[in-house]
Length: 125
Image (tube, one colour):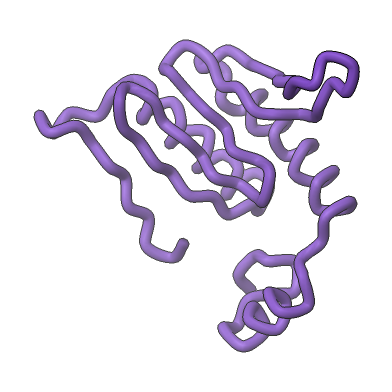
């Protein structure tokens, strides 16, 4: 995650989805200290935040999985308008904190993070 690579369409122009998702990624990093990766293609952008937390963006809205409805046997999603990446980042940060509390790093991953100089929380020191 050290070198951020942003995929762009063959015409070399970033789509609105990529621009919005990159603002979300930057806000997660600067305002909340959360490292994330950005991936794009087919007019969608994905911000990979944590295991089980992938934020999708189509340029109009962000959406991410928040749980599962056991009765309907379907995933439950939250969404936020893409014109408000700072507020969306705050909501995503809350989900991230919830996932981190309930699904911490495995011992193997923690050991690898220490070996590479990252903090045990998974963020660079």
